[in-house]
Each structure stands twice: as C-alpha cells, then as structure tokens.
Amino acid sequence: MEDVLTSVAKGRPREFCVDQALAAALGVFWSKGYDGASMADLTQAMGITKPSLYAAFGNKEALFHKALELYETEKLEYTREALKQPTARAVAEHFMRGAIDAQTSTCDPKGCLGVISATACGAEADSIKADVIQRRASSQAALVDRFERAKLDGDLPEHVDVGGLTSYLYAILQGMAVQAGSGATRADLESVVDTSLMMWPTR
Image (cartoon, rainbow, N blue to C red):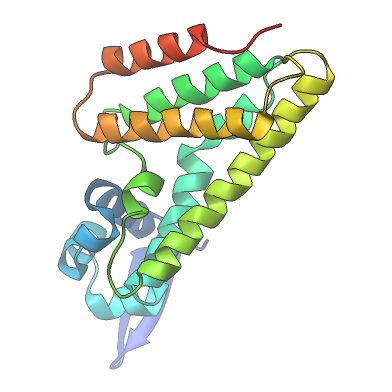
C-alpha cells in the first residue's frame, strides 16, 4: 500500500499516511467492534476527514475489510509459525501461547478482532461475518491438514477425529479471546493453555 495518498477535493490537495491511518482504524475496530466503531471514532483516530476516508478506503465496510486484512497479516503471524512446529502438540501450544501474547499485548486492544466482529449486526453484518468466517475456515483447513499429516506420521493416535480436534482447539482459542476481552489476566489464560495441553491426545 502506498505510504502517502494525495487526492484533490474542491481544488485542495490532501496528504496523509495511508498505512498509519489504516493501523489507527484497526485499533478502533479491534477495541469497539464493527458496530461500536462510529465514523466519528474512526476519523478522529485516523486523523482525517470523512471525505478523505471515503476517497482512500471507500465506506466503513470496505475500511473494515482492509483493517481485517492488516490484522491477519501483522497480528496473526504466530498462527502461520505454529503450523511449522515439529509435533501436533507443539502446533497447538504455539497457537494458544501465541494467542495469549496477541490477546494480552499492552500495545493493542484485548481479545480477538475476528471474535469481536463475528457478532456484527448492522446493515453490513452479512459481509462482515462472511469475511471473518471465510478467513477462519481457511485457517482451520490449514490446521486440519497439519493434524492429518501428524496422524499419518504416527504423532497422533489413529482414533483421533482430526476435524473434531481442530474445532476443539478453536473453541479454546475463541473462549480465551472472550475472556481476554473481559479482563482475564495472562496467568488466567496460561492456566487454560496448561490444562488444555494436559488433555491433548497422545499415543
């Protein structure tokens, strides 16, 4: 994405850093959810006017989709690293501990943008939910593939339902996100991870 956007409205040039503005919008959506983020909240955080927002990003819905893309690229890198771990248990642990780091960061809002935005109920709810669900489904499919390989390698017991195991892990991750957004401490979430790992299927 370009660092600087220059546009002309009514003969007056406008310049601002698109990347910084988008990062600011992400912070608003992450902390307030899609429905809770007003245009006033967004323009104030982004340091731009409403016409500038429309010119650079389209409407609020389009801005959210761009912010979600940024969130997935920058904040969910740990999910891609998790898939590279040597065992299925290590994959799950990297996922959960990475989620703790992301959900309890002092630099970002608490919780998970995807979980928060999955409850969108405004006029654009279908588009927002569909984007969140599609991205989650893609991530889950990659995890299923990884666990299937682990099963073939003998790293997971033959009786394990890989789809069910993946859904179980995501249920834990989503529950942790809700708890983090509700004020759970890092120690609280670490306890959830430790308990979940104790129940991980082994040969």
